[in-house]
Amino acid sequence: MHEMSIAQNIIDIAANEVEKAGVRNVLELELEIGKLAGVEYESLEFALKILAPGLVLDGCRLVIHKPDGEAVCNDCESRFSHFNMP
Picture 1 (cartoon, rainbow, N blue to C red):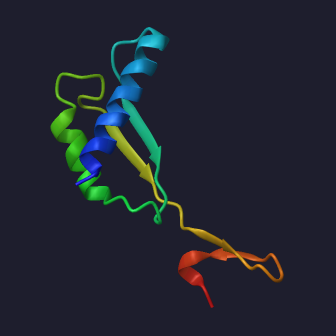
Picture 2 (cartoon, rainbow, N blue to C red):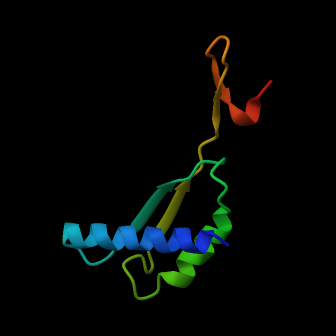
C-alpha cells in the first residue's frame, strides 16, 4: 500500500512547513490529487489518521480535490476530460 508512504511524506512536508511558519499545528490540509494519480483516496485518508496522532496533522480537517485527467488531441489540439473521451 503506497498510500502509507505518501501519507508519511505529506506529514514530513507539513512538519517542515509548520516549523518554517513558526506555528504548532495544522487546522486544515488541502490536497490536490488527480484521478489518474493512482492513489486510493480512502486508503490515504486512513493512513493519515493512523500516522498523524501526536504530530502536526493530528486532528486537522482533510480536503482532497480530485481533478479529472485531461487529454489533448494530437491533430487539433482540443482538450477534453480523460473521463469524457469520445
